[in-house]
Image 1: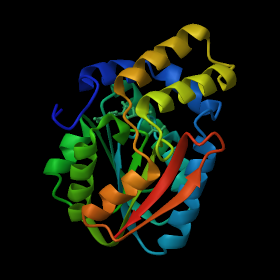
Image 2: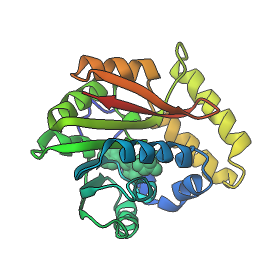
Image 3: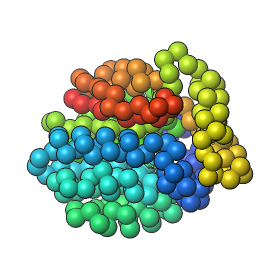
Length: 240
Ligand SMILES: C[S@@+](CC[C@H](N)C(=O)[O-])C[C@H]1O[C@@H](n2cnc3c(N)ncnc32)[C@H](O)[C@@H]1O
């Protein structure tokens, strides 16, 4: 991974964390990050936006369990998912098997992959992965993805978002307080592991900052489609 665009340590430590997929699986099964609502909004938008064949590139696809639900009954013809974690990709293959489209899965750094990607896409989906990048790295990602999208193409940015004016430290503290209060099904030892991971690797932007980065790098329109009740996680639509 390009260390200039990634904060908080190497891709190796992120990969090692997500090789233990079951710990994160428990979070999404219990909807502690509002995956249900966020991916339901992705699904609604895909249904409305795509009435003819489209292709999707997913960055940091994880187990793709919610993606498989989000693309159901839409005219998806080609899906490409990449992730650092082989454990996640193994599950992604199984979860996406129910989706009737051509598929490929690549283990590696998604943000390096987009730099060499030559094909064009209609949708780029980044689910809870771009907060590991620096602000500059996020800008570069928008620039690169803008060049990869067909006319009418869109990006979905699902991520943690700081409130306007909130520092990273205050956000992390708020995130941890929510975690301690709400993640009741997660054993304390696992919560501590998450805390370590999030405090070391997460550099979330505000909604406004993501919108500015997208606009400065070639996108014309952005829209916040969903923000969760604790105001920690949300979904931004980015369009040319
Ligand atoms: C929080 S999980 C999100 C998984 C899934 N997208 C979701 O919405 O639940 C973050 C995923 O991104 C992957 N990831 C993080 N940084 C990555 C990178 N540079 N390249 C590829 N995958 C990455 C991790 O391995 C992990 O599977």
